[in-house]
Length: 223
Image (cartoon, rainbow, N blue to C red; front, side):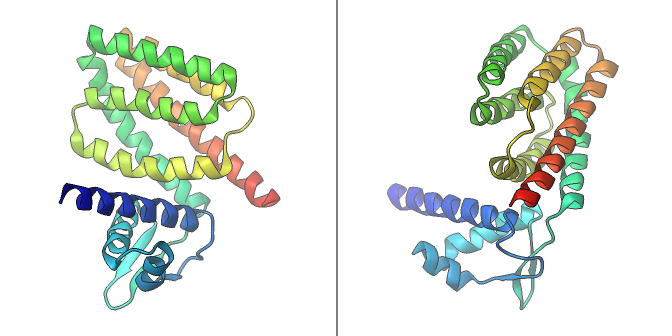
């Protein structure tokens, strides 16, 4: 039974990741309908993992499930990207403010270790490593915010951002900017300077948004 659950979960993740990639890459146009039977046949799975994938992507905002019509692809454009970063800014500012008040020596040590790895990844130009470490960095801060619902929403948001980054990458010099912005955020948080920390977090999200949109424009032009 445990093996069956593992295989089912693995199949669901595979279908979800592939479908997300195809929607974000433009293989489906806004308004297109996702047909469960076709996707199940493509992955050689039952309909259930596909249905679970559709529910996940609906929660992420990529699809709309309409009664009697099924899953419809939503428009994914620059406005969509701005909206998800606006959500991210609001939630991360909230959690960063609380994290400042809840900072411990143990968490400070962990964040310093992650930051050292981030700086090394930036110096090496390791974009994949940076994405993983960036998620780890923000996760440590977000946990200190002690708001599981905000963390859940950010996790959905993060799936889309990672998929976009894998498709469009980062602008030249952006990895070093991320490392520098993280260092400034940490310094403010360690001082428990709520105003400075939250301002830096907001600017960090805006910088990420602007870089993403710029990369999208260049990617679509060179397509």
